[in-house]
Picture 1 (cartoon, helix red, strand yellow):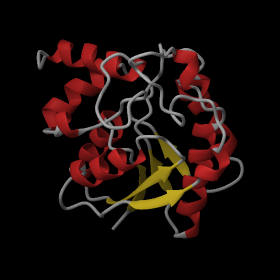
Picture 2: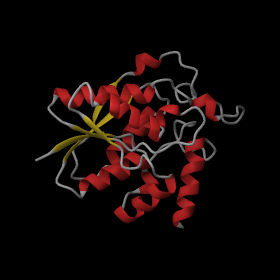
Picture 3: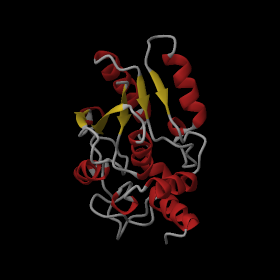
Length: 206
């Protein structure tokens, strides 16, 4: 059986890709990164909850020391009652590149040639490493140094496109988690929450 690694976070995008892959004959190996995010416990619980039942349980890797001391509000949680959180406050430099490199290294180590991600073409300020152009360039680089190939089915899609696909696939959307500002519950105001709510409105779910 063909095997593939999936970068899984418990969020809507990667979970939808998981459900897409679940309808194929691919043996999916989900991997989860603890990079010091303040919501890591919630994300870890959710990723174990929302992945398709017959899929392997995720492998967890700790790379949190790399971002120790980061001022990003993804690492250092804001006081949402007293602090405004803007796009630029959430940026973590080279995070996506680190994820791709680590996933490729793990994949080649265990003899897997394909890595799937849920990354979409981000419109968030400074998220230059979440754009379709970045992922295309990264694929061009990795194609010259090893056999692992990356697949991002939603790289040219909007969050609305992902939400519609999630509805069709029966993804447990309400249990996915992708808030950037709060470690315990969706704040409803950070870029991810706003984009998610707008996408769900397009589907008629809210």
